[in-house]
View 1 (cartoon, helix red, strand yellow):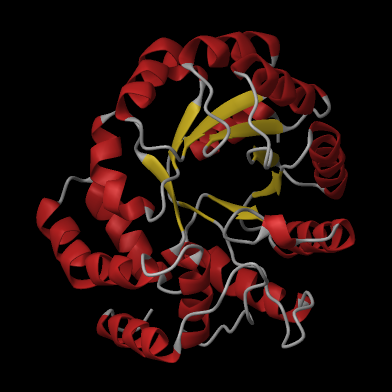
View 2 (cartoon, helix red, strand yellow):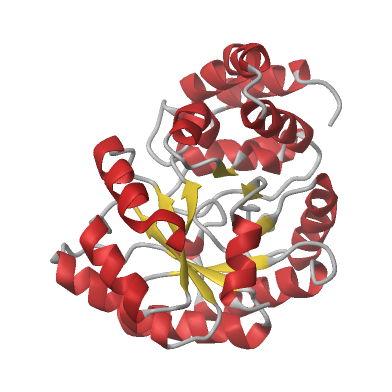
Length: 303
């Protein structure tokens, strides 16, 4: 799959980030991860991101990363394309990128570098170095310390033919509009705010109809129904699912920093696909929060 073919796939359909399975001791649980991917793949997501933010990329050792990406690629080879999360310092991100390419990932999601602030030019140089280290397609994730502007993204697009996607995790509407208007169809545009469904209709109006769904991990049918309702502008269905599920879901998610991942792992367990605990520095939901989430999921019916 060349970068332009991947771009075409990412330009329509729902995307998702499978959680990474850990056992009770916190080690990667390969069998559980395979079971999860085999369950989710047939629901119709156009691509899956292995070891992304929801997959706790930030907590993985390099040796685990290789096993996770290989497991995802091998399991989903005939069903759905796998993109691999990469990040960290420039040299570290390049090592991850080249390893993911070697293992057969169809593309990369370039997560922000960590800790240090950096100039726009420095971040752009980081992105360019990672893109030029591989031949597969790359999606840049504007979030946290990565806040590239439209002119710099345009320059990167000229220098890096395999930079084929832009994912927005900032929620800066003025910036999003300026990027969308300036870059046009050069990129595939993905909504990446947690929880993306709440912003989906607004982002579709901005020319960003595709987003990544975390709740696909535990209510995949509802996630797909919601995506299709947004696509056909079925405002009644969109409003009902937001009222019945997403707003009370956000009330739980917003209680602690890091719960955007923790609540997804809790949902997976409730749905019968236990992915184990989150790793420090994240913390799992409290028992009463878990029960509240279970009640919300139960109202969504069989998946």
